[in-house]
Amino acid sequence: EINRVTGVQTCALPISPMRFIGLLAVLLGWSLLAQAESLDTVQVPVDGRGDAQRQDALAEGLEQMLVRLSGQRDVLNEAVASEAASRLDRWVTRYDYNTLDDGSSALQARYDVNGLMAFMAEQGASVWGIPRPRVLLWLVEQGAGRGEMVVEGHPLYAQLVAQAQRRGLTLVIPQWDSEDQGRLDVADIRGRFDQQLRDASSRYPHELIAAAVLYQGEPATVSWRVLKDKSTLEDGREKTANDEEAVTALIDRVTDQLAARYAVKGAVSDLRTLLVVDQVDQLQDWFTLQQFLAGLSGMRRASLVQASATTLTFGLDFSASDEQLRNLLELSPQLRACPDPAVAGPQWHYCWR
Image 1: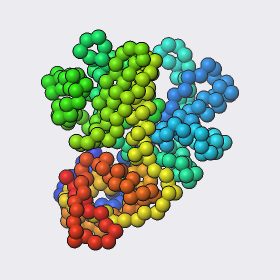
Image 2: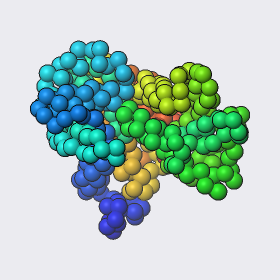
Image 3: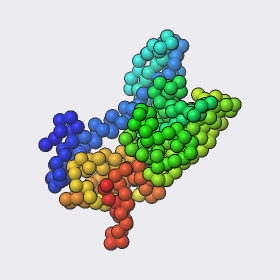
Image 4: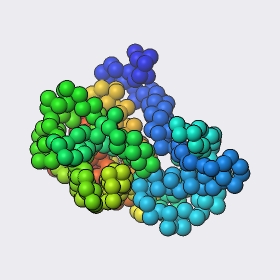
C-alpha cells in the first residue's frame, strides 16, 4: 500500500516495473520541484517602489540567481549574463514587497530556475543543479575563551544563514545541545579530531561535513575543511577585516570549491553509459536512486532499462566527463562502487547500502 503521508510504497519488491515507473515519475516531479523552490527566491533591498527601482532590483536579483545556479561568481563576466539580462521579464515569475524589521523595504522576487538552468547550459555556462549536497557546518568562533559554536542565537548566525542562501549552499546547522556536547568539544574542531566529529554528525542529515574555526583579530581569520566520509575534499584559510566578512568569505570559498567539483557544462561531451546497481530490494530505495540520478547536474536523462528482483540497470545520458559523473555519484550515501571483472563493456557496477 502507498503511505498517505510520504506517497511512497514501502513493501518489498518485486513489483511491475512499468506500473512503478508511472508512480515514480509523479513522485520525482514533486521532490525536484520542492528542491528547486529552495533556490528560486531572492530578496533585494529597495529605496522605493517605482518602476525604475523595481527593474533595478529585478536585474540585481537575476545576477544573484546566475551566481547561485552556476556556483561561480565570475559567471557575471560571461556573455550568458548579458544575454539573460536582455530577457529579464522571461525569468521573473513573481515579485512582491516586504517590510523588514528595521522598517526598510525589500523586493522579493521568484525566478524560473529550470528555465534559467536550461538557458545557461545552452549558452555553455557551468550549471550546478539539484539535488545539491547538504553541508553540515560546525563553525567555532574562537574568542578570548575556549570558543563558542555558531548556532541559532549566536550573533553571527543570521549572517551565516543569509550568505548561504545568497550562494544556494544547503547548510545544516547543528543544535549544539547536550547530546552534541557529550560527543564533541569545540577543541575537537580546532584539533581536527575527525572521529569525534563524525560521531557527533551522525544524528544530522548530510552528505558533507564542514569544520571551521574563526579567529578574531585584525585581520580576522577563518580556517575551514570539507570532509566526505574519511577524506578531506577541500580546505582553506581566509583573512578578512572583521567577523562578518570572515563568515561571507567562508561561505564563498566553500561554495566555490563545491561548485568546481560538482557543476558541469552542458555541452562539453556526450557520455553514455550503463549503471548497474545491485541490492536494491525496497521500492523506496528504487525511488530514492531514480530521484538522485535524474537530479544530477548535467544529467540529460537517466532511463531505467532493466529491472530484476534486486538489480536495476540505468542508461545514463550525461553531458560532461567521466570523472565529474563519478564525483556526483559519490554524493549519494547509499551508493558504493562494486568492482566486478565479469562485467564487460561500458558499464559501471555499484551496490546499494
